[in-house]
Image 1 (cartoon, helix red, strand yellow):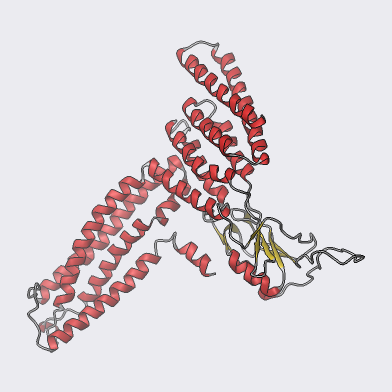
Image 2 (spheres, rainbow, N blue to C red; image 1 turned 90 degrees about the vertical axis):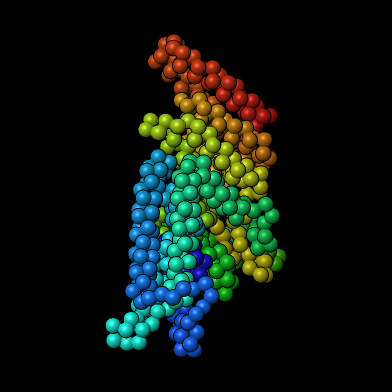
Length: 464
């Protein structure tokens, strides 16, 4: 549950401002207390700190606090407007990247915490006309001025950062980094000792844990599931993988007894023993280890990370955007994640406990299905865009050179053959509609011939 909370919190705008806001309040109270102690001891002439009046201190603190809150509100409202425009062109799911950006969260936290600091210090300022002893927290007020200077630097940095972050290359780099990270997690180059390729069979009539809420499976606490299954002496087979959508009553996991292994000679094998009743605490724990949310996230969902870059390529080819070069860079970014997928061993479905017994089975996606997702989109949207198609073929060539497993090469060959056939269909349609004339048609024909030749070479290599 702690991991699930951290996963949700790192995409929020409330965590960093809350933590830094509490720190600002504590700092303000501490410095005000320090000022009282210094003044009670008769220390009023401090180095580098000038004498301040109560009215002047109030004016300074009011200006700092009010301006910081105004700057934060204005900056982020404009930024969200710009992000909305950008996401409409390259995908609405990119707004999540803006919210998860550590720089954006930090800048908002700095602005709001400065406001809280100024507010707490302001309430401690007293003058003789207030009916009490005059008190001006000189140290705390000068620290507020210093924080204001720091905030100006953060504002300049924030403007620079936003100007960079809305560029399509920066957006693609962030999504690519997420893809590489989740590929390293699901398809590690050096699998850990607790991963197993061979998993025990859980009987089809084993009891099923169903979802109690609707949403996408955003994160599965696999370590927690292993500990829970080990404590209960069961095997948990997940029926809903990260990225799947469930509604109340649909199956999340099947719970069965572990495989008993080889039986003595003459013994009858009826399969693993059937778990007839699930403990309510176990059911609640399993549901808690599977975090549901309103949207998909790329932390364990490899397919979603792949589709984000694919969506950027597809949207850029729409008539409203008409940007054929963004798909090229998107396909290049996809190569950073898909090439390791086809090179490395398939994702190990089993997670074992300390004794080496498989306790959790996860239906991870295969390399074949991930590659198919991309090439299906290419066939649907990029066949009439020569520049984008060239980038897609370069991705195919990279995958062919990297893939060594026969199953992956066979699946890739099937997808390339479909792409080649669809490209011929487009050529036939254009020839019938255009009549073979026109400079544009001739240019597309020349580019198409080159692409078809490259695809033929890939097919010969895959089938050879």
